[in-house]
Length: 294
Image (cartoon, rainbow, N blue to C red; front, side, top):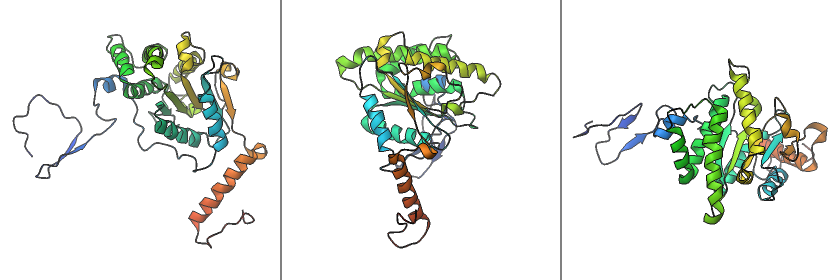
């Protein structure tokens, strides 16, 4: 393979296939090499292949309807942060996964972050706002320009959670929101899943966890009222959450019930799930399992 008259370029961790013709195959190792100065500064975590399974088609319609009503509620007194709460295994991550897809289809997904316990990158409190800022920069060029100016400061520290929340999130979004109405731009939504899986016990991470919690409180009660238009949805068990999230004026709370407390709608979703899964698992007559079998 030859590169005639090539000069002044750097290739890091790349693969090239020489097919002997005009075809060029380029493989980008996302997360190993950085494709831009902004990516190098923010170090967003790689999320490809680490996405939770979404809800089965046609299920959880009552929850998505409630979320949709809240997202469309623009009254000043409406909380701008939603907490979806449940015991483990009740479907919080599946709902968040489906929600990301639905928002992406509507063009209103600003950013997302899915925590995962035991994953070195996806459990770090310091990775959240940096990754979300990178997503927002990809969402809008105006936001990107503001973030680029911020990270080019000599004093920029990617691990300063509270300071970066102001510079990477609040400032760019406040500027964006001040012009969104006049330019008829859509207001992006942020989704954070499994906040309770954020690393709390690692060396020094308790302090970072508290700083992250403080920024979420600031989101729910911002100094700049333009930020009240920005909606953030997070899922978590009720573990180590700030007491402010118990205040219905600051946080819209959805509790996914389990056991004997499940709603009729949820029971129907469970029934549908078993029907589909049993049909996938075994070769049975077309209409098996019947309602009586379940």
